[in-house]
Length: 212
Image (cartoon, rainbow, N blue to C red; front, side, top):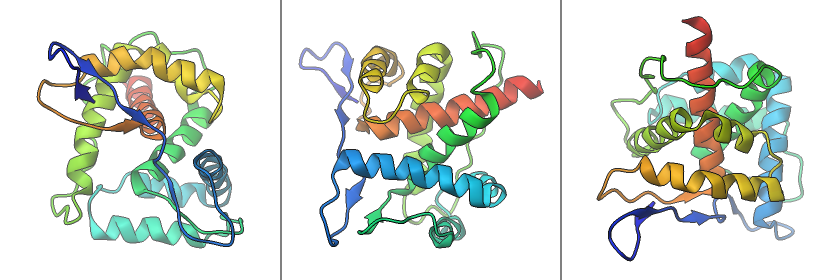
């Protein structure tokens, strides 16, 4: 999110180049990579859902957490001709989409989270790779976005990747995200990152509201 040219507001930079394809037998486009990520997340939930959910609760930025993420790649779910390098924050968001759909997708949408206390998003104190600092900043935006418009956030993560509905949902959330940014902050949000932030915040807020 960056200040607009007039200096009086904020505009959201939405870039699609989020998941990078490593050199392989064939070129993998961004759209295909995003779809592969979602298929990978669904497969992993089916094969190792309990392990996955445990990892999602570990503090972001810790070396041990990174190692646990890498261990998920050995579950036999990535079956394509090339090798895709998934950014951890993108992978995290994809998994939250899957578990939100599983746990809350068939229930009525929550109208408001105003009665839900602040969520403690897990960040490691060591944070040697700066993952935690980036995650904390992004989740501040994501939490604010979902609290401001739960219906729009839910609509986004229930759309198909690379669909016209996804594009329309992103556009609808741009003004909401802009209002969630503090002046002077610069955060670049791609489509996949916005989906991931919406998914994690919506899931955690939904769990907290259900358990209140």
